[in-house]
Length: 476
Image (cartoon, rainbow, N blue to C red; front, side, top):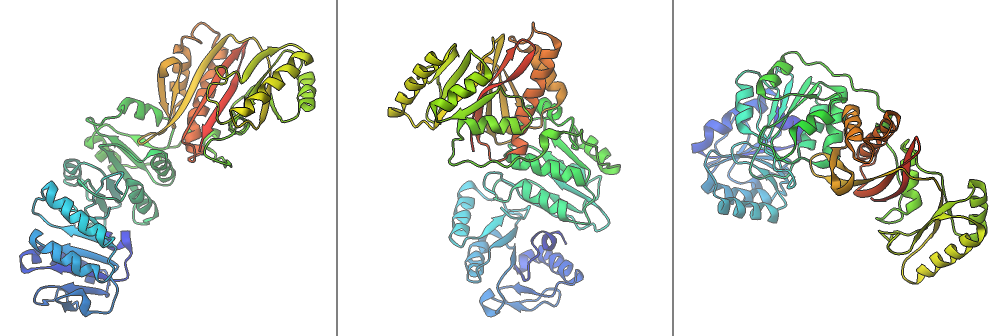
């Protein structure tokens, strides 16, 4: 049974009345048929179901509740929650056909918070993740191997009328168990052979996207973005083109996928190997930000960190003049405006003077040292900005005024088109555009490799036929 599989409770308690016996009895019979023995029935007159022991209150038995099924009319629910709270019930499913007003549901949720109870319903049953309001309903066709995760009850009804389901998870107005949690259940359930996810609202950021990718690598997975969603369906489809996720447009295509599921091979992508980052605080130091990009395989301009003027001159001699230097400081967002960056330093004397000026800024800012880079004539500059998004995970904004935006799972074709359309790059050679596309794609993919990242910015520069990153700053 799906509820026992999802929650694997040691003890199940079913509350019901005569008016809801038709709902409660099949649940009890299913538990008995599944060989589940630790079940208690709560009824005002202690009427048993499926030969399980019956009580008038959960205080009459010694077991601590693992999962509670409330099969009750709305009027009886409040007293039942208070009663169940005496046994420290944490997880509960609500089966109730009566409509709830917003005020009634708010009062109910206030009561569940008081008892630290995770409750989902009415009507669709399940558990709760406040960031992503999800409910769940269950199918009992043991012969099926398809799990449906959706946010639209109409979609679930249309789908299940044509396709038997092992388990269905559908939307509720309230709840606090996220879709990622159900994906983990589908991934672990040996009976589940294929997964279909219908997305009707906002998602769960890069954890959600990573969970989709992990599941799709093991089991056939189709994602069906709803037409009325508040996100760009075309961008989502295109960004997932090179992954193992199959994107479908409607229930009919999802049904066709369910009939003949196959794991879609993902394009081999070194960008998706995980990277571990270590940061002393939320704002990563400049040098660590540059190293993060370099470790991700993104070309960065030759650079070195120094806290010593003598060492700085030795690096400058090695690079050859001119050089650029800037203060390594998490406190300074715009280093040019703060006087914390100087380009095209031509000799040791000028380097000494600039270094002294940067050290004077310690009176105003926290400065760890300076970063020196090779100098090259810049033919084009393209700003890159990274921000965490609730649906796509990391979104990279590219160009002036965030002209283009791409999600973490960006396809190579999309990156190439963006590079060709950027005004700064449009007139440059195809080789330059290809290098820029590779950087854009790898930069966007950092969200999948480093889920700790919250935001970031970088400057992509073109020097002749070479493209690289000259500055970077990230928060994690």
